[in-house]
Image 1 (cartoon, rainbow, N blue to C red):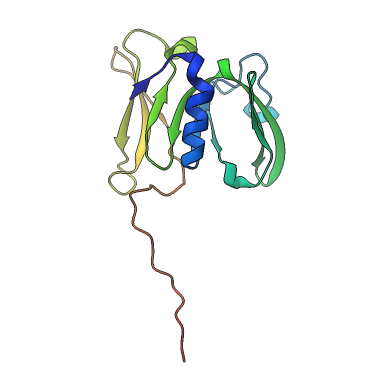
Image 2 (image 1 turned 90 degrees about the horizontal axis):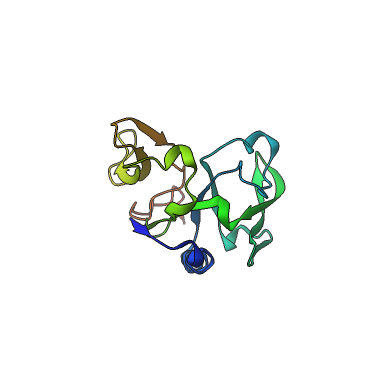
Length: 161
């Protein structure tokens, strides 16, 4: 896992977005965050960002402003940089952690993010697992996005002449 200085968040996110979709983890309780009401108390809110969504997205000095869809409805989200603390590229699987912005309840001694394959899914599909020094664990649910290492499926249609 790559650990970075918070000053480089915008540069890192731009680099990852240029490669493809990025899973960002943020503390939705932080000041200035605007997401749908039912998500506002989530300290580990995970959102997918991509230029390919075809919806407005802007990265500036304040943070990310992006229109995202939730249950089929578009919502104009505002994500300040200080609320974002983990980026994971869907393309490469590269995680980038900003430890200074991790919510206090997760920032205890020995807390780290570990990429592990899922027991429920095919080997090699990453998920993020919170592991504290006391041995307690909290698992972050996986994304339904296909892993970049999964070979493409063959189409089910064929040409009949």
